[in-house]
Image (cartoon, rainbow, N blue to C red):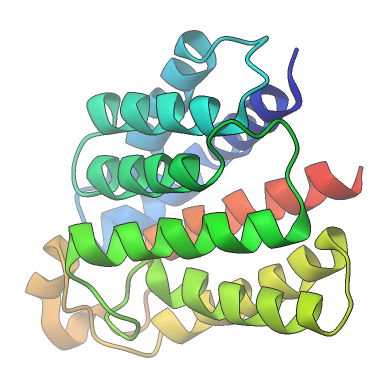
Length: 205
């Protein structure tokens, strides 16, 4: 089993373990299907990405295409795009350095912003991912290794989740609630943070 496949599988396990939690969050401000859809998507990833595929870029691209075709709602296109854009950065590579991860996360965020026409501060996954990237970049530029950088990224992402509770949703179904969306954390920011935490634990294991 390749390292990238093992990591993707771990992410899927984390999403599955948190399926009900993510769905409950989505019930408050969305379609009540985020955890269900994401779990279905990652089950498909485990089946469709070859377990012996060493090319990280190819594995991420396949994962993204699979998520795009199996996850419903807004999450499928956004997560699918994120993985495919990260895959372009990692094309042909069989190992990921601290700098590689930064570049991959930058590409994923850029893909989400373009696909979702979203910016930070709109109660989306970007409110976790952009602070995570900033914290990760600062850490590795300060000499931290990938594991330590991911630790800082996860702290920032969790702070981003807390931030989403304080703002009005302006994207997706949650935007229909207006001020009633205040007080609820964003499901996408939560699943994105769970993903980062899984990668951190995988790298540090």
